[in-house]
Length: 135
Image (cartoon, rainbow, N blue to C red; front, side, top):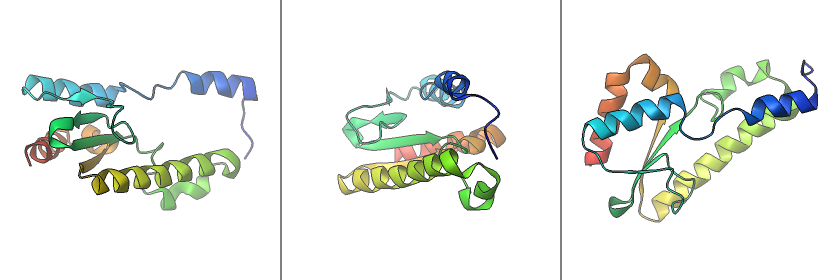
């Protein structure tokens, strides 16, 4: 399936998609602040720039969007254009796994939470994050 937009228009559209401080991230950040959790956002000194980091405890939390990070990618990859998107998402999955592995190797505890978990059941997601941060 060909893209319905020109390359220039697609580039413009994609440039407006935020990689940091997404709506879901803001919800989690606000929850943590309300509960007195001190953390670093998008911590650049740790591999993969965790969305939430507590460097003194070597704790990293990644809040991953389902599409961009390939949640259950095997089930829906046949429905997207092969040329660009499959390669992009597959490389994101590989990069994420490598970052998590290397962080763990360096002594970090790593939690990945999916966007749909926060949207579908915020209380459960917040509890999962809180428990992890206390561990």
